[in-house]
Image 1 (cartoon, rainbow, N blue to C red):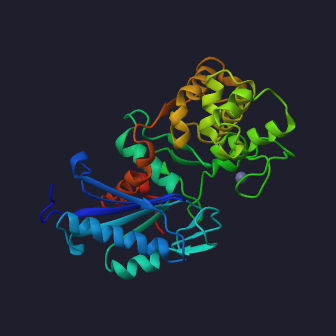
Image 2 (image 1 turned 90 degrees about the vertical axis):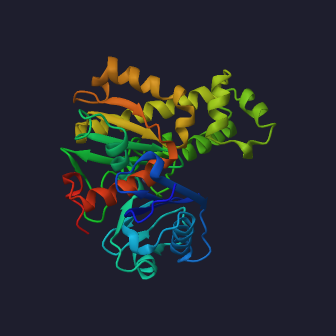
Image 3 (image 1 turned 180 degrees about the vertical axis):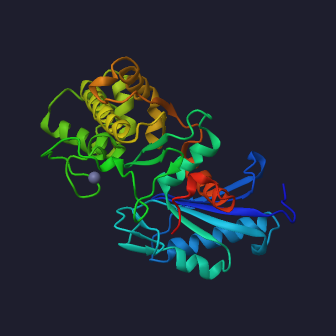
Length: 341
Ligand SMILES: [Zn+2]
C-alpha cells in the first residue's frame, strides 16, 4: 500500500458539506488512489484551507510519504472561483463571501505546483480520464444535480474555462422568465430553481401550502412533519403514487430537458455524464430524459442529441478530476491547454 519513493500527486475537493483530499500515483491507478473526507469546517475564512492542509498531512503520514515527493496539488472547489487570485467568491454554502485558498495552501506546501479549478470543471476532467469512451472524450459534458446544478464542458478536446474559470454555469440558465421561484444565486427562474434538490424541496412546500394537488402520501411519509421533506422524500412519495410529488418530479424533468437542450445547442456534445446526490434517484430521472433525446430530440435541441449517461464515481468524480488536472498539466495534455492561470 505504501508508495515508497514514488512521485505522487495531491488533490482536494471542497464542497458545502464535505472536504475530500486524495493522494495518488501519477498513473492514477485504482489501488494507488487514497481518499479521505471530513465535514466542511466553516468557522473562519481560513478554516477550509487549514482543513485541506491538515488532511493532506494526515494522508502523507498514513502512507509514509514526504512533501518533497509531491509533484503537484489540484484543488477543486465549489464556485464561483477566481483562478488568478486563487479564491472562491459569492458562494452561498461555504460561509464567507470570499475564501482564500491558493495563498494559505501554498504557504504550507511551498514549491509544489498548485492548480485551482471549479468543481464541475474538475469533474468533467475526471470523466475524461476515468469514464468517457475514446469516441466521447473530445466533446463531453458533466452535469451535477444536487443542492444546485452545475456543469463542466470539454469541447473540441479542450476544457472550457472562461475569464475567471467559471465557464458553463449552466444551472443558472433562465428556463422560466418572470418566475416566482428564486434560485440559490439570487436570480429567479434559473434551471437550478426548478430541477435541483433544493428546488424540489422548496417547490414541494409551496405546492403543499397552496394545496395544489394531493400530497397525502408524502405528508404521511414524513409523519406530518413537512420540515423533514427533501428531494429524497419527494422521489420516494412519487414512486408510491403521490400526485403532488409526481407533478414536482415531472416538472423537474421537463426543465432538465430544456437545460440539456441548451447545453447541446451551445456545445454540440457527444455525451453528457450526470452526477450529484440526485442520481440516487436516477431511475426516476434519466430514462425519461433518454427517451426524449433518443426519440424526439428536436423539441429541445436542433443539434444531434448527445448520449446521456450516469457517472459511476458518484461524489468522488470531483476529487478524481482534481487529480487528473495535475496529471494533465504535468504531462502537457492538450485538454488543459486553456488552463494558464
Ligand atoms: Zn441561479
